[in-house]
Image (cartoon, rainbow, N blue to C red; front, side, top):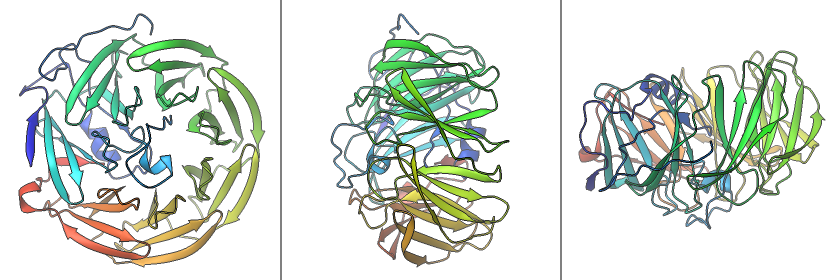
Length: 415
């Protein structure tokens, strides 16, 4: 394994990380990837990158090296892939020392490791993205205390470039998308206090256009989707109190607004593409009853299909275990350690895979670590560090342990 130091060794830095949030999210998130790093004037990879924007996708990367046709599972703006080899990589943070490392993966092997150094673990959140459409995961870094923002363009385990952007008041929260369809990540900003919205259309580290959008009810929450499958991100709005839903179909910063049928407040939505048509679908879960259903979306047309019921001890993540380009649903029981996968065909479960059980204390993170187009499962043993990867083919899981040389102690967290 090759080891690189990306920013040198520091006890503190302007580049900082909110690892308590990061560690928490490593136990929860499925496809939404967010948490922490810093806007620094000393980001470097052999030289210092300091550039300023004069103004203040999901971006599908260039043709992926991964054979799976679905960008939800291959885009470097959604799944960490720092070297564009089509294999999911791992990002780790040490909650005691503040060190951050990137590991480039080839199956269960760590082929290269780069350290960002040791940093002050405070204030900053990050989103992964691909701002220059080179197929390599980048970062949007935001200081939630000061409102400062910066972009870090990655090349494997090194920083290729970094630039500061205009500061934005801390009431605003960023999300990533590709609203003009140029395959370069853009930034959607939402102010949850007063409902204001804006879009920054990006080209690498440059803000091409900064546009203020219509104001929405502060009770609404936004999810970035593409309901019409045209390669331009849309915005799904949900009022979790009333159950009202609507969508903004976007063309750059221009919107067309439509109402969708409402769903009782007990239902929560997550995204996937269960029929492989490249339009975002919704997986709805009733947190009170355990009911599940899918909305297959085509514009504002909804095809609904009821799925099985699972109690609240089960949590879901999306993947594609048979490589057919249709997102499947992986379920893990945090109480018993039981696991199952629903191989999806639109609104129906084509096959239910009863996977082996393991310790309920293990934390799964999904990715395609060997680049075969089929989702694998990385199991993190937060106590002993005895991690392993399940390579899955349809309904069969083959377990391979992470080598002793690559084991990380309990203070290291990943997603």
